[in-house]
Image (cartoon, rainbow, N blue to C red; front, side):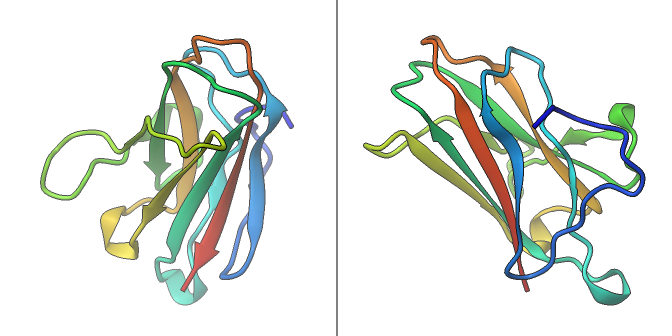
Length: 135
């Protein structure tokens, strides 16, 4: 699946849905994933989770979560951790090279979410990333 696209309207996920953001890809530094709309009924915010799985040990890497109210590439900004003012970043994996970031509905304000590879993996691996929504 390609990175950020201009599909109008973009994909939407609802509680229980999952969408592939990267699908067995090798994103480089600065590459953006597919975006997804996570706005619930009547504009309510949904919880969102991201599962990122590497094909092998990626070595050092960094993935940021980004949000936007308008689905335009230039409107996305990094989601920051509550109160800390720092970007919400995925850097840690389990023994199977899988990591997860979960967002509470109060932890972000944008209608659209995506991932951005801010430091590509040091090792030549592929990555599969999925977004899921929950109420």
